[in-house]
Length: 72
Image 1 (cartoon, rainbow, N blue to C red):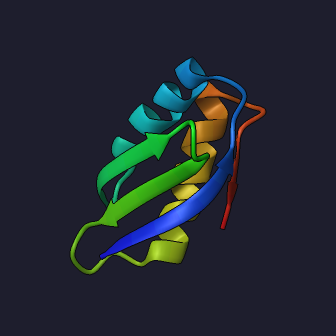
Image 2: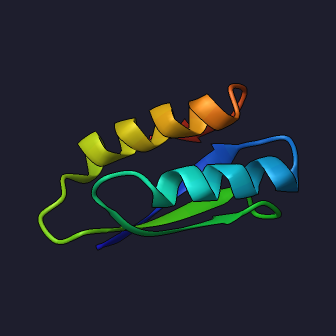
C-alpha cells in the first residue's frame, strides 16, 4: 500500500535525509521525498499498520532534521 503525506522541510538536502531515515524505518518498503512538491510517498510492507509506522518515520526524521514536519 502506498500513501502520500504533506511535509514541511527547509532544503533539498534535508529532504534527502528525511527520505533516507524513512527508508530505514521498520514497516517501510520504500519512501520517496519530493522537495519541490513538499510530499513524501511511503510504500508500506505487507501487513504493516500505516499510522504506527508513520509515527516511527516521523521520530526517525526528527533525529536527522529536527525542524521537519510530516502532516499525518
